[in-house]
Image (tube, rainbow, N blue to C red; front, top):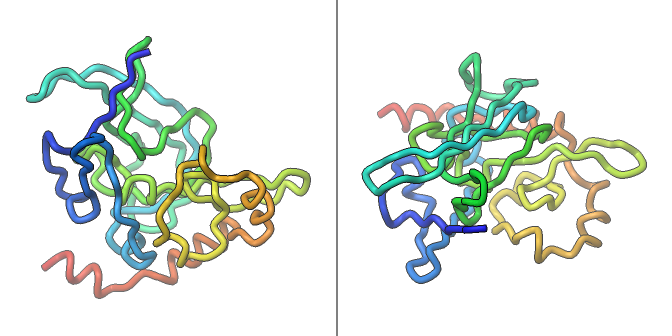
Length: 210
């Protein structure tokens, strides 16, 4: 399998410019974690949705041929903002046959995933999620009890909105024991949605419009 790491040196993406740092030697993307207020108030809209399909295709651009993926969503709840009637996330990267373009740090979706998503710049940036991996919060179920809870994109249970601002460690290097132990304290989807709505600050909107 041919795997490529896509950095950001080839072009500038306006909505992520303040959040992205480029590692020049590794071609990897390092994202500065946003504060919760920033995540809520600088995103375009927030939805709880289930992935209906994921499709990838080749696209020709000024820098040559690349792979772009389209993630079709079934919106179960609109938490904030006004999403389009039919939501399809467009993002750089994906796999076609034996060829894969990987944007390091970007979330990967599969059919059936349920998430709370902070969508920003869809179709205009390499990632349609605000601050890339910091804009995705999987909705998971606790083994045994079936209790639904919110996790970060690396599947670490989210116990408080302040934890949004912490760096995200890759799931592969996170011990499963603390994760399993932390599910009881994790926010439910309803609690997380309520705190998102409570964090809305009209001053952010006025500042963005001027």
